Amino acid sequence: MMEVQPFGPGSMHWDTTGEYRNLLVAGSALVMQTMHPAVGAAVAEHSTYKDDPWGRLTRTLVSIQTWVYGGADGPAEGERLRRLHRPISGVDELGRPYHALNGEAWAWVHLSLFERFVVLNRYFGTPFTVEQERRLYAESRQLGAILRVPERELPADLEAFWRYFDAMVADRLEAHPTALDVLSVLHGTPAPPGLPRPLRRLWTPVGVGSGEFNYFVTVGTLPSAVRRKLGLPWTAREERRLRHLGHAVAVLTPRLPERLRYMPIAYRARKAARGARRVERRLRSA
Image (cartoon, rainbow, N blue to C red; front, side, top):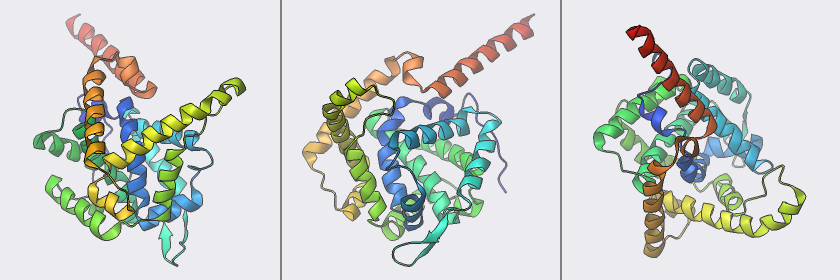
């Protein structure tokens, strides 16, 4: 069994997981995850992504950031998630039994995030070198231990991961109704809860524009084999538009102040870690 080790400063996850730009691949991650038949069935029957998309997104972001920036709370959050998903089971519309903690499905939800990190930096940052990918994947295995993913389901190294990923896309993922429904929800962004009534009247054009943007980025960042399975067209012109957008994000992101670049949990953890290091240095030099 892999040792559970919390993340900390110096890890690639510490530097990247809490950035706001991760939202650019959040939609495509959920689409790919729900293309796994067990995940798609579980989400369709038990998730609140349609009734409360903003709340669902917020809870997911808090959970992910706790894994990385929560210190000792990270493994505890992983255990909480397993308890939360333990009762989720049933039979899908094709008569196939499913369980949220099925080893293959639980691993796919986790491992697909590594591939999304790689794609995020390919489009909206500086593409990783092979060595950086190796390091990030080793950390992803560490994260898998935090989430109690069975070790047998985690490919041993980067090369094994890409073989696994290609096989999953080719042989296990399907054009699941839930994945197509996620795309539909992304295309029509609802007003955030708590938005004052006068502003809700103004939300319609904002929501339409936001939905078009979400859909465009989600479809564009999906692997071409996944787009084909879902029957989603994508043109060379659209690819050029996405590349231009990605270049702008890649140039802007490093120039942002840290409090605008990182989500609140990540920003506070990074700031606290720097403060702790300063205190340490003073104590050593005293």
